[in-house]
Length: 66
Image 1 (spheres, helix red, strand yellow):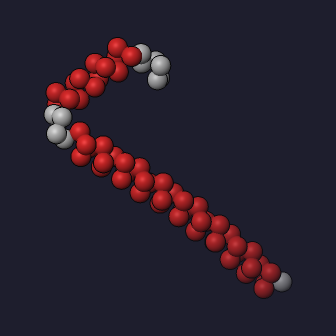
Image 2: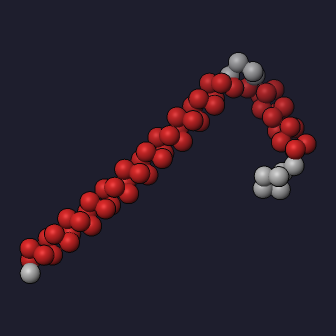
Image 3: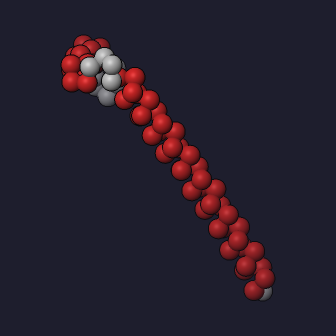
């Protein structure tokens, strides 16, 4: 059970999605969502690395100022 949704509810949601988008569009939608998640993870990882670089630079600057 995902977030209070059982199997019957998930099947109904899937059927509604199939009706709205059609079977031909589902792979395209899935691919787009996958690429979006991949880009989000990459951006998050890059931001964390840049944050760490800033901290290191600030520490080095403090050492030089002393």
